[in-house]
Length: 135
Picture (cartoon, one colour):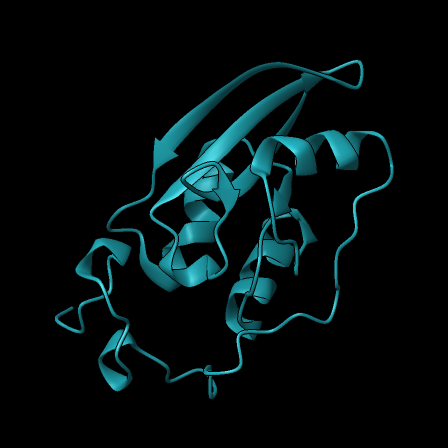
């Protein structure tokens, strides 16, 4: 069984891994999605999201932008990363399973300026992204 996670918001691939409040998890067997569910990651934050995915036995992640620290954490967790993916989450999983997913391995979140980054250093916008600068 393979488990794919997609950063998720309103059916779309959410474009900022570190601010992702939901993941859609897909259980895949014999190249087919056999089940899926949306799970909340609220409160996990930048550094804990790789561990959150590991707890859910995820081995593959499809996402939009992602910072260097998160990339390292995912690699250490043994999670295969497909960054730089926009669009409908379900269709992107189908594309991956069909071997035709378009992604950009060099996609980075440009506002991450090293290991000292924290949410208080920039305006994240809506509090719903779990990043109101009040950690």
